[in-house]
Length: 341
Image 1 (cartoon, rainbow, N blue to C red):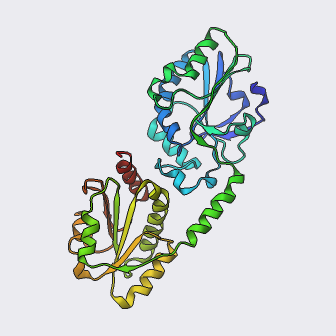
Image 2 (cartoon, helix red, strand yellow):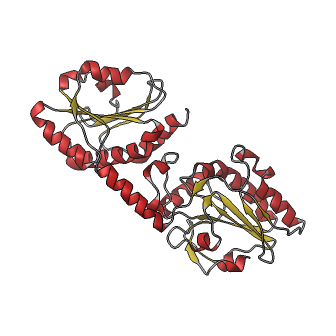
Image 3 (cartoon, rainbow, N blue to C red):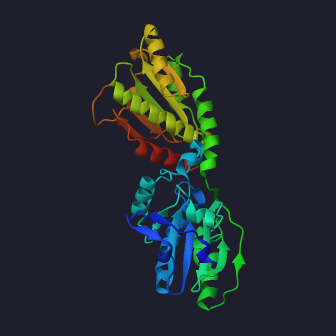
């Protein structure tokens, strides 16, 4: 029953604090667990928004919970989203998608999550007007998320409206919720990343052109730089690229960094790459070898390094910029190309 949920005082993305008394509606209560980074949650979010307009009229109050301890999410588990599960990213997602329900962060102490023993997102719970649990399980068929109105949860709502309070439970499908105890695995993965060998090899114009023109359905990202670029800018760019590469590489992303430098500057360039843990395909070359790479440079902005460009599977340009990289735009670019495959 709903009174088994331990006392909580949790913040929603609208800035309001929510307590146990805020769960119940006139007819019943619905608690749905979604997470930003969960691919299946994303498939259902628009339909939860549309169905909630109906549930409100039916007297069912909905609260949507983000349950993940976000620091315990592995990098490659973020490969289907431009937003993680931090509170700030929840606010961003709610604003972007125009959420019409309370979106509440339970990632720190996971009070509601643990009270209901939730393990997977998305998961749905329905309570009648007396606070008795009448449904727990999936929202609907994840292969047909647009048919949520015919899904198991919607059917349970219809039963509840007819005061048929028999309990139904269904299997859930989605992404495992991350708890604080999962942080040990993340720390081991980070340690492994730190131990990856960083290479820096010479590439002439012929080799660089091969990478530019090769046929692939996956995104390719080129970053051209020098050791004389603004140090703060270089550090931010390379750390951001390193982060995105670790997120998307299992989905097929290829990253090429090309440092324009002489042989006696190679050691310095390699050290910069090591500090960023950039285990991508890293090359150095002379200025006369990059003539074709300059086509990747954005026409807007300054005409020197650094500059970058994402190429889609057809070799067409996607995100690119000169200077500081907008890491959010870069991630969205990778997702645009990857999600077409």
